[in-house]
Image: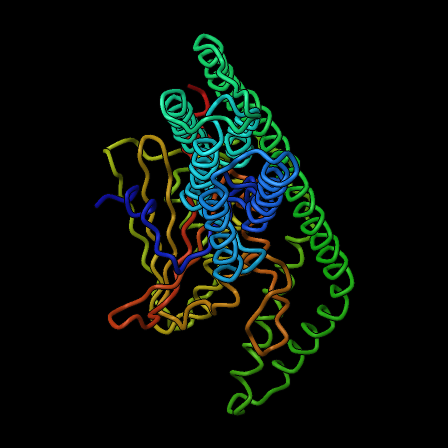
Length: 449
């Protein structure tokens, strides 16, 4: 199995975040209560019509068989109500099966009451309209076929239409005209209502994605403002700490047991000043004329990973290609460096002995996978991956690392997938962060084609 196939076959123990956000409307899914309410309305209408014809107009009906057909519909509705939670979503095939049952139930009632000569034959359009609104085109097409088959069967076989003692016999041409009206109405509503519903879903999805993107940008902007303010406020006290630590290092006796601790304190203070300086620098637009603005993908990944101390953890970088295509050439952007660097830093902090980075590409895609042998992500974090201020640490961590990394890499066109590595017996043996780009969004040479 190649790299691309592995990406498509992600395990369920993973959380994926796409650059454009998640869609809030899913074709083929409908709430159970929507169908149960529609069926209750249909049942009440059918009972009223049957009782009015039988007892109000005193016309003879096979009332026992008709009530049996309606009773089956009532029983199914009760089973549906108790089987699923009221807010539950049905799968496409379940919703289509319930609508198919409604079609067959109506066909049996029409068989007992005159077939297509019954004015209520128009109700054949109801299940098709519901399907076209909430289900996929495939399910709607199957339901349209079922309606046409039932309508055709009712032309040839049905009990007489309940009427006065004189009776009513409609011409065959008129009956076929009713059949044509039902078929054309079914197909027209399926196409018309389906097109309107699909367009409405697309507009709703676009609005939801836009709102989600704006909310994430506002959160990232707020975090960036706080970082700049913190860098400005911490500059003076950090300088004082560095000066004090340097003086202590000078005054300390050569054989003092605190020498190593003070040297570490000085080194960390210098590193903090460098980080704060990077936060205060406003990144300029990329200059395509600068030699170091363009770099091989593997070199850029190594550069982003080498910025962080290993502290006894080995870091391995593996480079491969899926189809012998050339290595991508990318811009050395701050978003890529800081986003990937945050993920590598987290992996190094949680790893026990080893962190591996696997870089691969094909003619269409680019993959970077960071794995560690640490405790893995907690289920709570996997369920809310990418949200700010989510952390499982007990050292007052803000929980912004993954959020910032995800937001920065999304600006480069990357898509993150976070999961746990499970070994034999299902035990967690580490964590994995996969970043995937379309090659056309990151590779400079692909952009120019």
